[in-house]
Image (cartoon, rainbow, N blue to C red):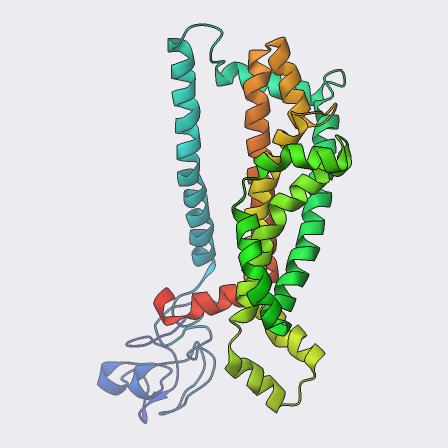
Length: 340
């Protein structure tokens, strides 16, 4: 194993061979005393066994590591860093449950159920066929999925059309859309009940109403702000309108679409629960009101905790999907000068 400055072997350094090499440094030499690993070298020789990127590199690091010292220890350090980050993220959650547990012991009985009772009761209800919590969860997820899917299709399509093709319609309809976005979605529940009844159609329509506005506005604003230089460059290279949309406009707008979808997911869960508490016979909202009427305190708090956890999990899933689909975005930001 050899490296810079005083590693022995066989060979010549600056034309001086044998045990007494240049500057008293013996061994397989290159100029500046950088030697190969067990090989014979010549002055000024750039490559060989034990070169800058091989065994015995210029920094005197042996083994199969690259110049700069990147090795398996670096990967282990990265895993340790992720573990540390996860542990730090869990601290607020653990603190929340600890405060909850302490508070439950200090308030009058029957007001606040402790998490040591809430969590086991919720898990038991989810797995118990008689409680049917799993069934009501699937019903709510189906309604959320349908409403969110319709909102994504309508919001993305309308956002692209208004932001790229129909600028006059944008000026005409955008103020109306902004007003609709500001309307409290809970206030329109009675109106939707009149138009759609109290079945699945009403619940899906409410989720659609609550979700479509953030998706539409983020898509429209991003489509309108596509860099004209990118469009001109693509057209100069002969890109057709379809290819221009697929390779320039859509990738440019996609991060904003994900932002709108994640905002919509947060609203969708709370919207479906509110809709299912009124005029419904199934779903998590109905399950919550039923347990409230029976005054099953652990399951009342458990339902709230479960709905919140599901919303967080779904939002996390979309964030992971975004990172997988937008690898180029992560690379750009990680290689930017400010990221160093």
